[in-house]
Length: 76
Image (tube, rainbow, N blue to C red; front, side, top):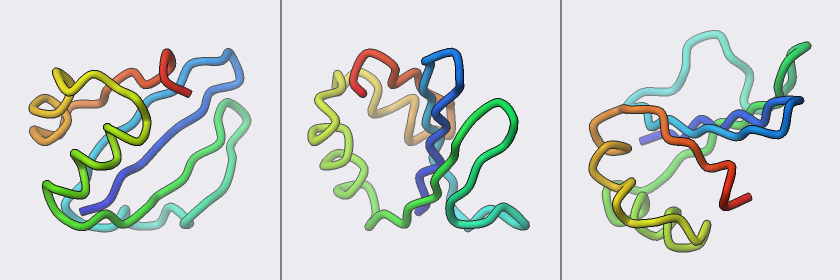
């Protein structure tokens, strides 16, 4: 599994879980609007640990696992 995080210039931050690496996106980089990172994570337990380390509500766990982008702005 791969976590894509985006840190927008306006201060907002989002994360999305992918089952495969993102095609042509480099591992780390930036665009005119945001910086992004793609990190490999070890399964569902790794996702839970990542959310706990971030200090995020575990209510975000299921939507995140289902591939929905989550707002992590309050936690970064």
